[in-house]
Image (cartoon, rainbow, N blue to C red; front, side):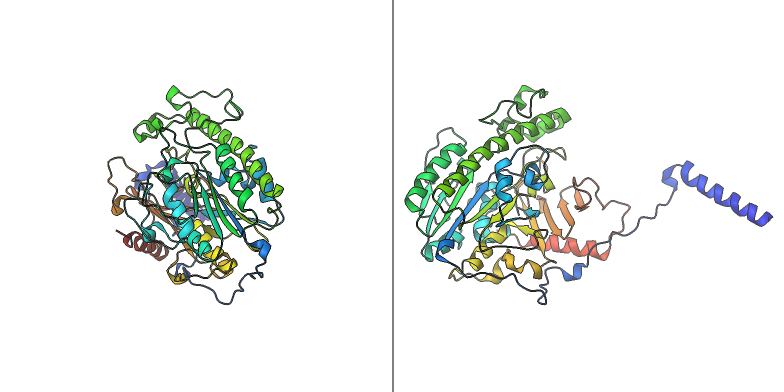
Length: 466
């Protein structure tokens, strides 16, 4: 009996020591991070069936790619948002022929290189386009040129001066409006309504053609100046500084971010959501035009965001990090041809190029093994693929634009592994949606799985195309 009493006393004393002694004297045992089998990374499972590619009919030969600048997935009703920002996009997503990809990502949160990724199926390290102001002239096969070589009419309409900054940009459109050399004066963007007017005029002349049409809208990029409402979501909210009233470019000075309050974040997010709300009206006008020409039903329409927008992690806007709000984008395909059963797999904007090659049976000389994207009918066979991401801007204002000082990430299943100039980060993104619980810290032993993820990240970073 005495032995038992002594045992209870000992347990009590040990437990008390754990809770009451200074924590620096306590040795914590932290379990290893449990990851999916990294040895299977990027290995295609040939035992899984491919999605069936239907026969291509004459009526199917109309392809429309709509890219909405700075549109993050989490601000749309189709992706679970509780504000009514996107009634018409949400309705489009509910079309019986639509697939909404739940986990779609941009490889880079900047406009020009993100679009190059869409048009080429290549990550920025291969294409050479890694910033909005590319200085090199790259001759790349684009999906536009391939459609043209296969007898399609091609046209591109864009709403941002960002595409006119680079004379080396050659997507290969037969019609490109405005021309790359167009003088926009001091305007940063053309409104969605103006862009639609130009697109409608082209459609009136070409709706009977086989065609590939790209339409880029600049809303909801900052400055946040919604044209159809004044304070739908921002009523009663006031920024701490009048310079923040429209999220103007001046606030892009990251030295000012330390002064941003939670109320400022709420205000700027509300203005951003108002921009989406207003753009959504023009999206409806665009869809109505397709229906009036009797081409909506048979056309393949792809709607994507080129990247997202930050209002978290002490960051604003985009380009400086790879967190969810900056890189997870809407990716919706409405098509009589492209029907994917599993919409939960990770997909990337680089998948657009090979998907269109496959489903439209386009004759081409592209080495498919060199592509970073995969055709979506192969998703079932590629559940172990890794997606790569990078930022074009250093996370610190003092860092120069060199490959060893940029932020890179690999996404494997539901884990995101990030390397910044500040260290390594690992998030389990299905449960840690805001990516606030870094699973790697000084007390965590790095398992072989984590080491493998780091080696994949380093491999991508070292393959930078200088």
